[in-house]
Length: 625
Ligand code: MSP
Image (cartoon, rainbow, N blue to C red; front, side, top):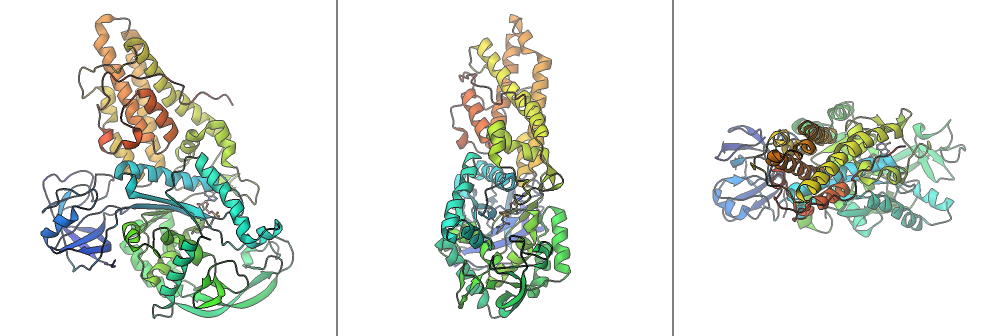
């Protein structure tokens, strides 16, 4: 049975071999205990989230060292007795990077399995319309993070979820306009989203549609848990709002346009109906306490401050059901009512983790490591959602990260304002990899920013075509001409100037991606490419090639450059999987790119002399317009 266990633990000592970027020091209380605790004959297994930033790693804490023998089954842990090794170093400011001997300070409880999945989610998108590049922004960001985590943890330890929010209040109306029923309408629209994700190389592990039976089961289970929690957290009240007869939907004052229905432009009526409400007001203190203990649970800081001030300003109960339409999940205790919008939509995150139908999977997966969202829906994710979960006896997510908006003409890009750009319009011209790269490189991740064709073209040409593209084609061409395409033997495996430029690059890149600093990660990669191109220009291997006495220098230069390209391909693969795979193939590395694991694959000198390279097509051909 999975059990909840709040509390802290102490690092008792740091044993031999400790190191890396962790912040744990002996005697410092720095571990936060997670939900799952397992008891073995010898002691207890405690799943903990470690450190002061995003908490994602696992450890086993012991009050009896004999338990360690059992704990060795946990992935990423080895040498279990009596000292436990943490998973590989992956982030600054995190304590999960050394070898620690830990003990709990409180008693533990029983459980069957441990969280061993990194779980990341996008919002579920409304399928009324087709996606624009604003939606794709969130999805690609998650994909980059998920792919990076697979490089670190292996593919079986990552769950990346996206999907569609199909019970939206606009769906029945949009369906009627097309002469369809609501289900047929969403069935027709949903593939328009998946086709975009497929073209963008989105590697989602699961795709949820909120009309699926598994979701209805999870919504029903969570509603029941909250309704029956003994605190009267769901109660019947009266909802009043502006009702449009044609839409058969309520609007708030803000949603009206000149006092009229935003869809039909016709007058609305003041109406009221009985609704069930969720007692959000009772969760003010618990939410404040939660965010005080776990400031990392909302990022970036500007959003944390916004959420904290909303909570401090007082929370109003919100309506969770309607009787005025039937498109949704019926309330289990009063099926005239269907759940309304957020209670349905947010629950998707636990549905896919197995909340209603797979307790083992749920224990391995929940709490989510990151809910990635746009800043428009931060209130729902960082206030409503954790309170709903607390009320249902489920742990809140470890982190909500709310990024900024893509703007057009200074305003949020949106389909209704006709400023929505479909991703295909850009992919057709720039290609998928450049698309995946551009937005995070251009706009500091977390902030708002504008897209323009000109800036995309400029970055494409300077950083992709002239940057990595040119580097790869020059190095591969020279290897072809001077060494018959075979990777030359270097004089020293430890390398020279480029090896020094690459020192710590893998760690820095990984730390940035762990901290969701996508822009900094790409900056680090681009700095390295610039240095590699400078190195080539300064050493001028084409001149060395004319002096037979300098053959070894030539070999060293090309070896370093090829090794630099190998390193780039591994690190860039989460961001530009297509380009990284093409380069990998040109480098002729025998081991598949998909089998590379970090940090091991970022070690300098793994390129095998003698490997047969081939020049191939340019990675990023120059574009003129
Ligand atoms: N269905 C709700 C979310 C429920 S999650 C439990 C919803 N859907 S939506 O289709 O409107 O998508 C909202 C999300 O799309 C935003 O939170 C954001 O992640 C993304 N974006 C939509 N427009 C955007 C921009 N212009 N810029 C960046 N992201 C944007 O709300």
